[in-house]
Image (cartoon, rainbow, N blue to C red):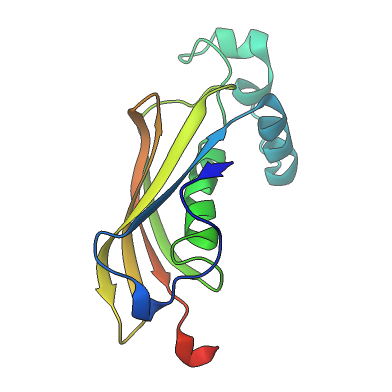
Length: 147
């Protein structure tokens, strides 16, 4: 994975409106196979070339939730990072991600409630500059008060 900042924690006291973080990851056949194993989602559109060729996608695609997991990685590792508690996530899938695609996943702070340690973030994933997933996440950020 390639990202724009080291992993760690940004506490609620230091989070600012408009702050953003991202990562880039190539989705591999191995990623898709491992996700199928762990999720038990063995839909052949993800795993079987012959089957997938005859679908609307005309080829294999990654699981949507595998792509969404990259958003979780940015949130859990970068912004806010370690100690973050996920409270909610909305997602809309716009286009498929295929084996070999480089996915760019980004989150951006759009609302902060310091008293409740709540942060709302706009999220998206893109392939070759085209958005493939959009959504919003609400999290509880870590605080220096609890260090």
